[in-house]
Length: 304
Image 1 (cartoon, rainbow, N blue to C red):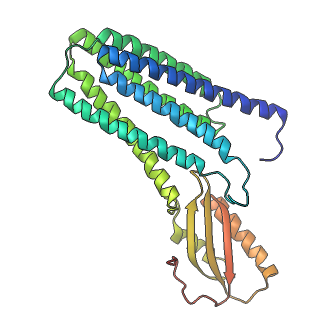
Image 2 (cartoon, rainbow, N blue to C red):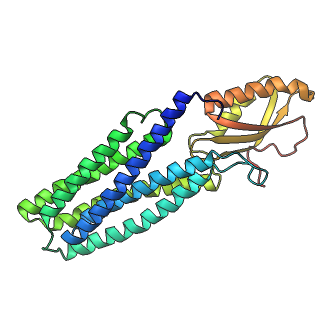
Image 3 (cartoon, helix red, strand yellow):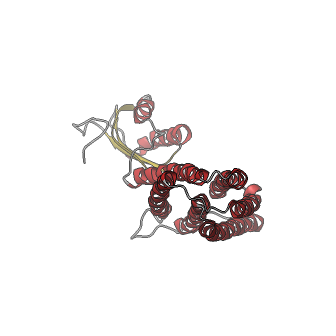
């Protein structure tokens, strides 16, 4: 990571403390909502509890795995531990998807057979407490939300929690005032779909990273054409591009040169190519194999 002044180090410690405080607060909210949901017979409160609980786990796992991912590479683990974050995200999102499916099915069942013993007052009180607690959690992270990627992710999770708690609060008011008991099932369905959508997106992204799929934002044809625009380059082939984690792109390829250059003469070409890939395509790590008429297969992708 390089040398860091003590002042910056203290700032980083504050960020870590604030994330932990936000996680603890979210766990407390989730526990209160689970108890309240069971006592009030409200699936909407239980689904909001799931949202808070899931976000707390996601933020905590991100925080822990991010610390682990900073460990130095070893002979046994040459890429280090950067994919621990992706594994954590996948495990958490799988759990969320499974629970969401259960909640959605329960919501349909309650729409067919609505309960009339739902305690609207309890829903309003607990949802209001949850909303206040979520605003406090946001306050913990607001100052540093744009300074650190993990803090920003945690901050956005908390905004989602505010949204779901506000919906439950409004639903509780309608249930209490107008005895619209089926609204609890509708709210459960809405929140369940919202969480499912978030969890499924994370699961899909984690899966694509783990199978080393080409990053969605990277156009390999455009990359190939840009490299081939260099005067010394004849052809670019056998390209591989993948995400090491959610932010770091790795790239490798074979480059056929116009002339049979010495290794020392290719250094300037390599430097220009790396600069191009870093500045224009956000590629963090590049591996290039220079050739001169040594590959019969010049296709962009080679079947390994």
